[in-house]
Image (tube, rainbow, N blue to C red):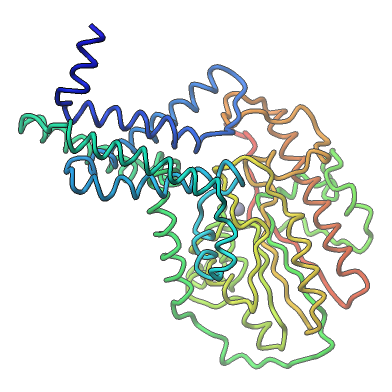
Amino acid sequence: MHKRILSVLYNGKMPLWVFWALLTVVYSAIFITIEFSGTPFSSFQGFLVIFSQWCVVSLAAGGVLGLINFNRIIFAVLFPLLVLLSVAVAYFRISMGVVLTPVCIELAFVTDMKTSMTVISPQLIASELLGLGLAGFIVWWRWEKVHIGRRLCAYIYMAMSVMLVVLPFAVKRISAPVFNRLPYSLWYNIDQYLHNRHNIEEYRDTFDDVSVTKDGNAPDVVVIIGESLRADHLNINGYGRCTMPLLSQDTAVVALPNITTVPFHTFRSVPHIMTRADSVNTEAAFTEQSFITLFKKAGYSTAWLSNQDMLSSYAYFMHEADSLLYGNAVKSIYGFDKWLDIDLIPHLESILACGVRPKLVVMHTIGSHWWYKSHYDDSRAVFKPEINSRVLSDLTDEQLINSYDNTIVETDYFLWNVIGRIKGRNAVMIYISDHGEALGENA
Ligand SMILES: [Zn+2]
């Protein structure tokens, strides 16, 4: 029997749909699996949930492979290109924890060729050559050994491919998980980058009619935009656990526990913080320049230090500042290694060391963003047991709240470090979280 199968494989013709299925399995087993590598789970049920997500992303990948596979000339051109790009994404993810984001693409454009070349290693070249060799063999096989078959089969095949490609666009629930992984991430991140560029270059209402007095003795201002921090989880606001051991001892710290946010997600909330937008005038968030321009008019040198994704709703403000620096430019919520705000401190030090003043520094932090465990150092894991699975049904409320509170201990440490850098200067630090976090209440 196996001789017959081998004979068909080597001498016969393989139906297109069989080739498509095999290709999808091989591509998914390598590249989609690497995209899911490191995803934590703590039970068999949790594994099944992650495996089902892997299947959805693999099916969507199968749609793309199906479309380019239909014609052998198109396949001969596009498949090696797809492998070349997929190998690069997988290589950087495995070797450096880099996840493809719009910021990666922006940095690739602004980084000079000499610096860019430093990321090209012999291992990357070897991986690419291996990938291209394999792709070449598959293209040859597709060219010589695969037949489309009956017309009806071809129609069904095309319909299925198109349906699988359209699926993540039609079903919003799976859009982000599919678009942020191969092969869709190759298109999606470029699309997001171009969308951000469009927003950065759009016209916004300026503050030309506002008269501003320059004062060389004005204080330096550090504005920190927090992430998902609940006011009721701070011991300085009466929370039972000591989540802010350092700041709660600082008598110069003033807490304002009754500030609320109108939007409850980052995309809308950050523009609300940056502009005069409020619950009545929501449009200003997307039509006005931010307070950064006002500070510039007042003679401030301005900087934006980012430890977050760049979203189109606030990309404009990031580029409004005189300088833009990243703490972790290559991190994404689709990776699970450490992504800490403390990484912004060297950038803050370099900005403060520069002689020009007064200064405005906006620090956009990752704070208490979900997957909490990525956002605090293990030495600040005060509350245990912590979360150990990406699948919510694997976790207890206690684990969730413990890890969430650990992110606040980390934020306390980060803010304490910022205060340490501006102590002794004529300076003020303002911290405001973009919104709170649901921790299973009313579930
Ligand atoms: Zn947020």
